[in-house]
Image (tube, rainbow, N blue to C red; front, top):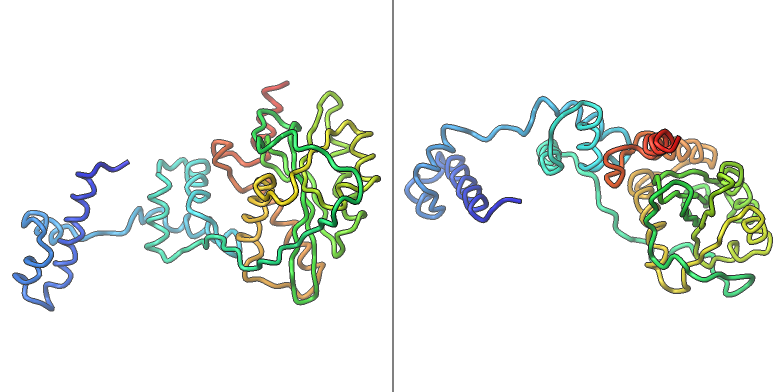
Length: 302
């Protein structure tokens, strides 16, 4: 972190640079009186005009930024530069470079206050929130979450139901459907049922939506050794980890876009999920992608 002395020095340098830029339009004496930079700082700024940040990296920054339709954030780009190109660079330096290049990845803002909700009261069996808000997992296949998010498009509505592993931050299974019905959940559950190691007691976390209370859903989880866990009604923080995944997805993939057909949306959404698992690096995973982290964990356990 910069010290107060460093901050004061940078501020003086910026004032001196501003004086140098305006010196041809206004009397220099007046500018120096208003800005009050040290004379030595002024002449240094005059002889050392500010240049672009790491110009040799700009093509790679633009390449990484353009991987997704809505751009890629500076932390993702910094991790790519370090992991792929072996560049020593701080996240803030990439953010500064992107600002100079006019590249901006928007911060999510909630605009639709009428979120999709599947809650219909108590229509089946419910379960305690034994996890609380402890979503940290020190191994694969220990804690996972699932939910449904809705996409409103010109052709109608589509729904995504993913299964997210807290250990690897990987989307290990998903289903994309026009209708958020029980068949949608059956398709989504297929992969975890087949892939879960027999000795693992997996805890799948969900909200209290009707589908997660349904007798067929509850029975299938129990028969396969899953320990069902539910967030409390009306407490959004209990499901915050899942909503965070949806937030990134809506920012990077969906915001400002539309599709003419369900098939087009599905193909692009499948490609984004592959990007999430195989390309998108995670800070908590020390710069690895979810698939790289999973494969490394499996090698270490072997």
